[in-house]
Image (cartoon, rainbow, N blue to C red; front, side, top):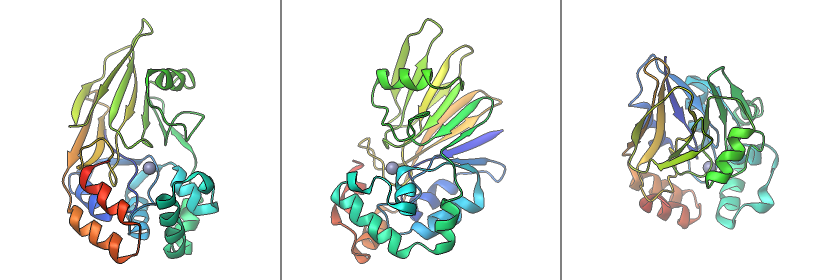
Amino acid sequence: MRYAVVSDVHSNIEALDAVFATLRDDDALLCLGDIVGYGPNPNECIEKIRARATATVLGNHDVAAIDNFGLAYFNPAARAAMKWTQSVLSAHNLAWLDTLGYEFRMPEFLLVHGAPVNYFEYILDKAGAGRAFAATDAPIIFIGHTHIAEVYALHPDGSIHHEHLQLGGEIALADGVRYLINVGSVGQPRDLNPLSSFGFYDSAARTVTVSRVEYPIAQVQAKITAAGLPEALARRLQVGR
Ligand code: ZN
């Protein structure tokens, strides 16, 4: 089975379309949340994910869209974009977001937006990764949230190895090793690579591949401007931060 794993689409339909163009018909799709927020096409992104995904979990922006959760802690641009998102989201799409849960577990993997149990914690270092491994027995944990593609591997001796996947790359899954894999962000990458980021998990080949694909950034920037969303949200797409 091959799973495509996407996260942090953030209402960027051009980026999502570019990712979908790389999928095979028989790929299952897993979504780690933050479908909405920041970008100009929340309804279109929800409808695409909803039609294709096998499992989707909630991100903090999705929860904010539903009931203002955490909005007081959003930075001004994120908050302005969320207010705009709430004004355009259809009742139907909002109701669908409200059906989602915070985690999805299969025997070999766990999907959460930020971290196991503390769903919206930002895992930024080995200490955070260690807490995540301790909070679940899932062999593979897929996360997003920081918009930075990277992998932490917990070896049987307790050591944790870390690697950035800024340019993409393949991880050969080893027996007895557990993995915390951040697939990066489809719609707003922040690891200084503006290319859209997502992953493939091949359960038979025992590999996880992080891919980076081009999408028409200028087109999204024009839509952000036309919608009256903060200009900073357009600028950051160009530089991937
Ligand atoms: Zn996000």
